[in-house]
Image (cartoon, rainbow, N blue to C red; front, side, top):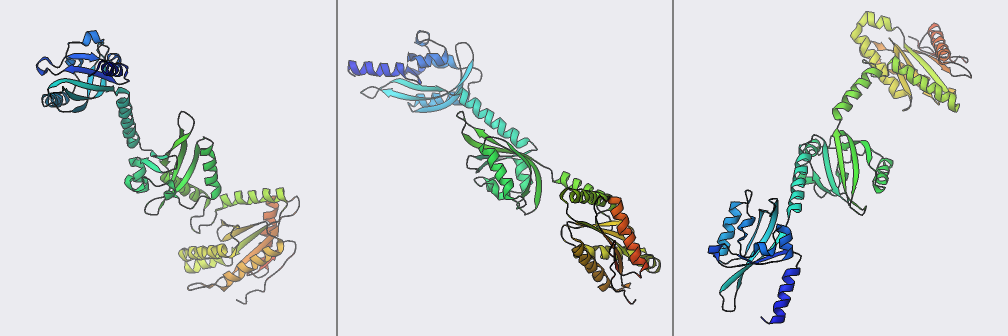
Length: 426
């Protein structure tokens, strides 16, 4: 090698970013150091003067993997290329993790003369990898449902709890988007709010109704957060949620028990009074019409006395069903007590309310029960007037009902403008 080339080689080794060390090939002496560049000295804490003539065994310690060293010795003996990773020790006794390779060097005649090693301290990388593995294990162990996506919302990680809750194996959903879990119960405004929050770097929290692999639905309290890099660019999204399906079911059951009549499934009186109060406030606020119909099954006590209470309960349930089917979708039907029902017609004109009440009466009268035969209803109707209270409205409707009863039953009586249906001949 010419002198200029040799100088270039030396400069390259000494100025290289990677740690480089050159040893002789005397295996019996442990391959003594001849050259070590500044990067190697900085990594190990040893100066070249301290290393020259010594074996690199000085870098080994308690946690150095013996299997790696055995592999290294075999490669050196056979003058083969070696590559490995192990724990080494600096001059001050601190440990670091090194990834290094060793290449044999021969002279022009093919005689082995040296070994050259290029080394890299990968401690930070290994610690990061270990931290990532620990984090992955921690996320997998948590009972919360965790899902991680890339910037295009493609799933790259989901923990065991997420897989169990959705019924999907992690391998099935990796690479897909969370649209896979859409239930169809949320409107576009919901997803627009989600996209807007995430695009602005804000978290989005809501109760999601998602769909499992088997098609069933579950409720999840879900928080979705964007993850940004050092430059503020969104690189990932993380979703953490909790399956609250059982809690929702319990709340719905409690709500149903508190608001529904156990026998008929209609609103009970307690909740019905709230509905009526809300409708009253709406009517007062916007000035729209509010009409009340009170219905009573004619001769119901005789049905109970003659056929028994199970039959009476069946008749109540059947009449409740007819009422539900006869009213508009937004109207409230309430079991007010015993055989008495109240229909709240919010934003319904007096004329339309009378027509609806007649429809209810006619449908009940047309029903033929196999045991009881014909059923009839008496109905009282009242429309809210200016400055009238709820109690006054109920009292007028109730008075109209009793007027229908006194008038022969199976008829509608309208407060303030009495209107009667033709009585049933029976």
